[in-house]
Length: 211
Image (cartoon, rainbow, N blue to C red; front, side, top):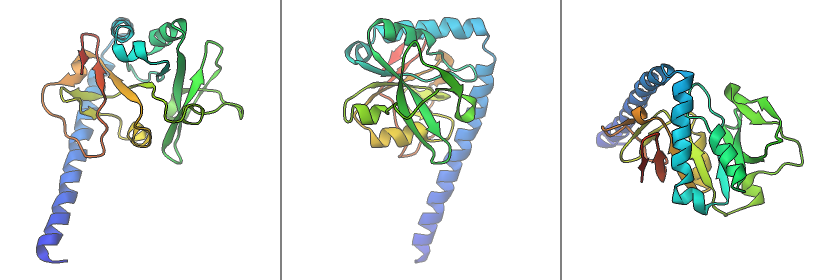
């Protein structure tokens, strides 16, 4: 490799490390800001977001909705889950595998039994008869609601760094995605981002829907 080629590769690595460091600092700052929310505020804002979702075209049109189990003051999907079941939708939630660093969605109902899963997040207690969304309905679109820590108005997203959603959505491009967050998690500056970062179709906050 000639000198110019070496500098190009080295410069690319340095740029990647710079982006990772910037993301790490933003994650820390946003986690600290979100931790200040009271339980009452979390419930209020989450219910406001649930109302936005119920009036969103993607929710109205989709028969299958994928939620998540809120962790560490994330936007709660509890009201969304109740609304979706009442509206006759099929609801799914993620189960993660830390060893393979993969994620799959499984159907849940009012009678689902829960257990503590990876990272201390609640997951459905599965048995061998339960099939994943991608096996039951291959190539059929669902609305996937996803958490995150920071967003910008171009819909760039900073998650927790595990890449679970990015990897899943790279393999299942048929789905519609909506990121849920509090209004203060959307910043005006452009966030550091990389090519593999998946941009959600919608960002839904307690104040607005960003399309």
